[in-house]
Image (tube, rainbow, N blue to C red; front, side):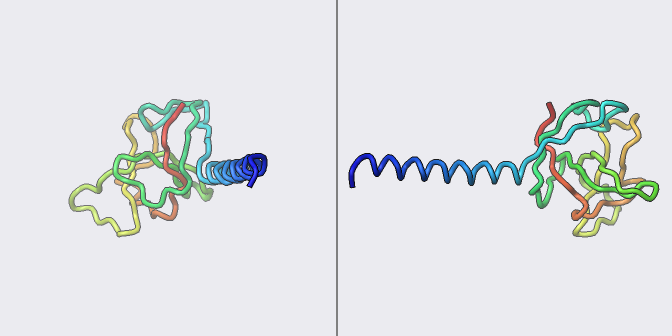
Length: 130
């Protein structure tokens, strides 16, 4: 095999690998803007921030910040909350999460009031805010 042919095959393999990598990154991760008005219930995430999220997150861990769908006033809205351990005495189904706000002074979702959130309602896990 001559060197030019090897280089041509290497270029094609590199382009194919790059295309697959780009597809993977675009389909798994996304950027979600936080509304500029209002307050954020999570410390470190301010109004107007952007969130890098993992949309393939199957089972968020305790202390992860998540975006989830919540029924509010007949409409489905996205809420931001932190996964916590359920308090002792609270019944938590196996397919649910206990979600709370960091800042109790901000009106946000609280499982102590609203109840646990089904894991299927989690849209994404927040990786970081910028």
